[in-house]
Length: 223
Image 1: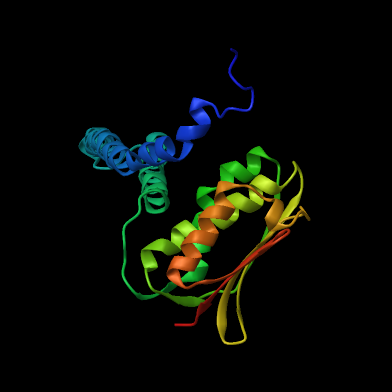
Image 2 (image 1 turned 120 degrees about the vertical axis):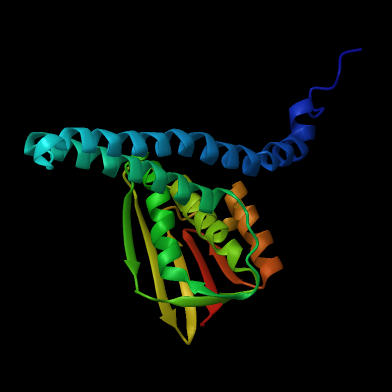
């Protein structure tokens, strides 16, 4: 007798377990990536300085025709190292304990990390970030996770060319982080993992979350 067409597939039955196992490898992979990329970066930096000394020669000064190239190489080495640091900050979970942290700065860095995602979908990202807004959280190490999930949700719900507004402000003596996309569908019809993750983690951390339609807003106690 043929199996019922309504029976769940093997994939459907193991999504949660497989995804959890896959994610559990991310910190180790990220640490390995940092190590394996930084080693050649350090070697390049050393060789660059050796080359610089050789180019100085008897005159003791690098020829102007080469100085620009050397400067560009140093900047690119620093840029790659900076990119690795930023991605590691948002990918690897490192508990930080209770305290306060700069919400504006965290959102700014998250926008930078996800800039390729917004450009790929030709989104018009409109940030309005009040400088220096600090928020209190029971685990400050989780703030980056919350911010990235909110941005991913907004980007994922938006059609190509749509506008996504991102705001950080003080409202009613609370620190507010808000992402608004152009999709009007309610959160109840939004099955994204980002939404589910936000609801679960905010509930665990005691963060006030408003998740409805195109609005995702989190409020925190001010520092």
